[in-house]
Image (cartoon, chains in turn yellow, blue):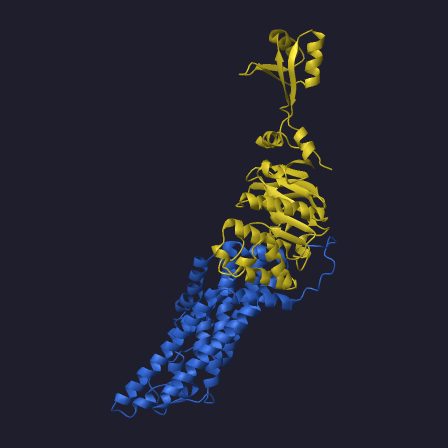
Length: 303
Length: 284
């Protein structure tokens, strides 16, 4: 369980993270979404005690992470695949980390095997591709068999097979009852991976809810209509506060009214409809819309 | 991956594990070996060369006094050679810190071990131990080989000669002291180029600014530099007491041996304190 309370980070006059409050629960994959520069990495660094919050707090398992003398058994983290020293072999890198936390040596070969780097264990990390470094970072996060996992953009640099593998891994870790918090700036990455979302923009919370709830927030719900009497329908739609626009294919798009209301109006006025299709906005649309101007869509008190 | 219970049985956090981890880190970087090998061969080579040319000088000289004019301890501890040792030790020490900051490894380290002071302390112990071994090898080899060369003209000193062991010990300790200073500068500057400049500035150039004896305080500051302390420790007491010895420039405000040891200790302690303080609260 990760809990952020009024978490704030300022660098001089710029505010990277502002009064951010959210809870990440165990057992599900929680996506941490926001456009580039939204403050995701800063938030994760504060959670790991690497950056000191200006105000507020963030706890993992009920305690600030920095209070723990050793971290690997509490939190596994992959912040940046480049956070390694290139001159060292993968084996030496993981061995040093394991040793510092009294994690048994055999665990090093286990995680190397698990991420598919066993054959590259003795090669210098500096010669690794980004995808291999991501796998090494994931191996390091798994070393301590921790109940909480933080991943900052783990899909970066992975090939399609690697992406599938990470998705499967994240879901499995969550299914094992762990807290899995994964950041991304692409909704498409999270759509098939996360169960819940924490969405931020300009350092502020936009949403902290399930994927379905988030998708429902998109305001650009529309209804596609085909009718023999567009003029009559347009008039009643306009009277109800909706907008009807002609599309290139001869159909019409109604916004501002639901499909049920459009059908009702057509029925009452005896306008023949050939087609009525409700189009819900996609997660991607909801995300773009809500993060386009985060200040405008700021949520009020969360919890 | 089988347990779902959070951190079932966490072993007690032991400092020894951090020492072992830092030791793995140090010996797994191939660059450490190359730098230390070169850093050992160059100073020893300089001293050996100095002894050999002095032996040639004695052998070719018609003047029988030439032999007594040469201080055999001086060739074992040529200042330039040990300035190189000092810089090498400082850079290796600093690299254990800036090497982690430069690429972001420090974040991986602190996410694994949030107790930052313990991490720095473990680095300090490992670096000091490795550097003491490095300094001891260079000082012992330099003394042993140069005195063996001098034995051919019967002026070689045994390590039991007055001041000889002190000179070896002082030179051996110069390496860990310089390495700790390097670590402190590495923690403050946090990048390779800047740290190397800072090391050369503090260890080599700064003492040069405080050499004058016109004002006592200027010289006293100069006396408090590691390089001045080392110079006092490798002084051959037999030579400086010899009234008819070669004409020497004698300082009005010399560094005593006791002061020299205190200077070594103080620089080491302050360096450790600076390194810990610089790393402890700063965002990484």
